Image (cartoon, rainbow over all chains, first blue to last red; front, side, top):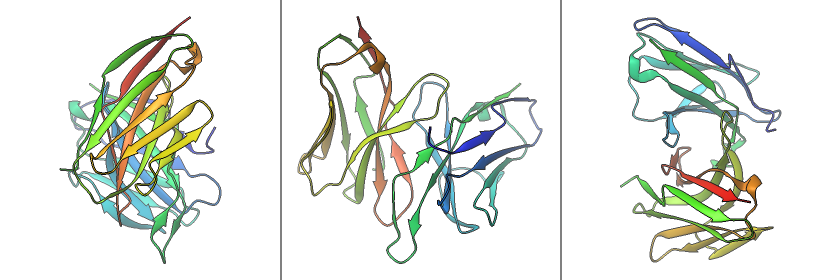
Length: 117
Length: 112
């Protein structure tokens, strides 16, 4: 086990609703990345938070937003849910050295399975 | 240009055999290449990783071979076991960034 936890494990929403997913990073880690994994595909990078600020974003619309808290836990918020948002949402934590911007490997949580009907 | 192409899509190997999964990339800005193992209902777990200044890295039964000039890297699983049956993802990290780009995955089945 990596020490990265996510909640809830499963979630069912209807189109147009909003959802909040939560992640607790591994102890000692200061960076959280979020990925979307559609069925049968590899994870796709959504965005990353480093010390409470967004530090890079993938090709996802603004209705995907996030937060990182002082304890380095994080939330992913998705507004105006669409059917294609159905996926496994993965959180990964890592330790970033600001000076070198070199990160250790990202460790993934078990994910939240979101189904949009 | 930011894609990582992974093959094969699925692989069936007999117990004790060698499993080989290949990945290729175009972007020379990638600076770190991890492999992840994912079991059904679980998140990806880091298996082994390599940097482009190294041509091979071995950890137990798992070996990464890296060919920088060909922009290819591969995972070899020696003495494959039924417990190795999982989906394997190669990934690449853009240098100076935090983004991991994943391949589409290889479903490995090791028959007893």
